[in-house]
Length: 61
Image (cartoon, rainbow, N blue to C red; front, side, top):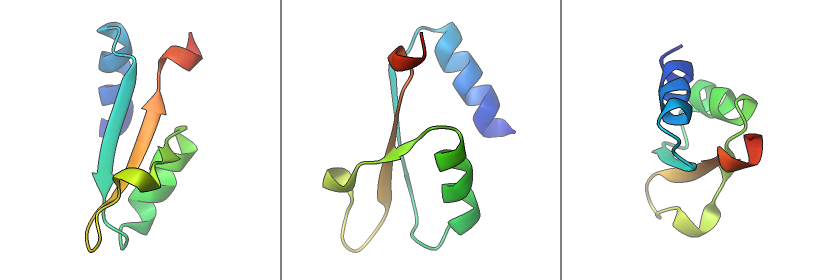
C-alpha cells in the first residue's frame, strides 16, 4: 500500500507524528487509516469538509 510506504519512510526519517484529512464519504480509506493505528482528531475537523486523523509514531518506539 502507498500508505504503508509513506509510514515506512516517515519512521526512517524519524518523524514523530503524522496528520491527515479525508472525506466523510471515504469509508474504505478511513478503515485503512484506523487499521494502521490512526485516531480521529475531531478538534481539527472542518465543517463542512474533511475529517482529521493523527498517528503518533513515537509511541511505537
